[in-house]
Image (cartoon, rainbow, N blue to C red; front, side):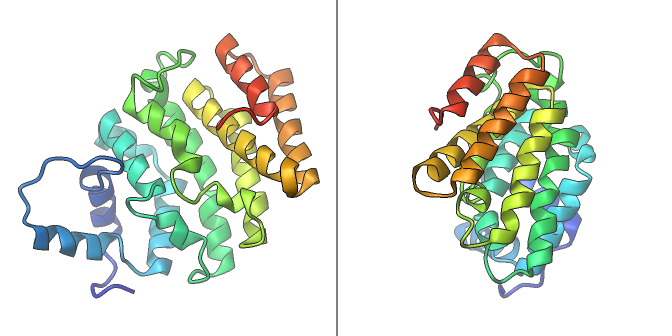
Length: 240
């Protein structure tokens, strides 16, 4: 635990979406000691408090779309899921009770359906176009699973076997319920990586489950041609 008490939820959200710069650094006039104090308060926070904040945000994220710009949401996504915070390294560690870990991972499904699927694709007005290189939020959502340690919840079950099924269910929910291409290829990207690991030297049954998820997706969804082609590549583990 850090030297400071856990920040209130609202303060933490504001930091993540305005000061947590993710994979780039915004301009600031703050002296180094101020930045160090902010990092200590908002990154090196009590693990249980962090998990509770994340879960609260993920379970009811709709307000974020009204409060912050798409670029801010994209940057915060890089921060929350990425190496800049390594929040999910903490979530997957033994510092947090297993049930809280499970609930935190599960809640990511709602983050996708109630926030990401609403703001990607130019706030849903252009859901089919590939905007990963055009819109920061689309690109960030696409990369979520391999930004830091989220993907490992399903890929490396020995560290936390209780997180495999919650992680898999998140991916399944995205493929069944999300509309925007950024969300769909985000899940497919993760599934491809997980399939590769398990088909090579891991759990063959899990590898086949990943394939079946893609097969069901291809058989039941009306999707753009480029997403269909992407899914076919993901099915063979050819997307990294």
